[in-house]
Image (tube, rainbow, N blue to C red; front, side):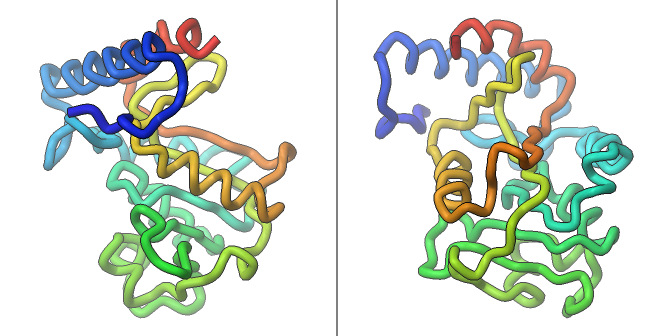
Length: 202
């Protein structure tokens, strides 16, 4: 199923992106590392997401960050949990930016549940405060999920454009500038499938 029917750009580039998504989703499924409900058509959750989050946690960029923004996708749940455990303010977009107040703000000092539960999509509804864009604080670290990523840092999502929209909204408001750290989050299989993405993006 194509999720990029509203995307702009040359038709051949859109088709190449769609083929790469299918390649990644198929590889994750064949290797049996995609977690429920499967990789197809989404930012895939994968076995090893917790270890990837721990590797991020051990970086100097993570240690310096006081405010983190992460996608609401399941693969980034361990990142969100660790942000709260480490005392960081956490911003998470309301899924599909579908509310007038499009971001959840999770304050580690004011949670109704454990960091694990509070950082889930359902748990955020209990522990988070929904905020308008102009109420956001500057973000030190942005962690975005992906389907594929190039060695140059270029990121390919599932085709819906929501992560790019989240980033654009925050950037337009001056909350994420060129000096901020941005990272993505993916499995080793995804990276192996993504060697052609830099060429496609270039």
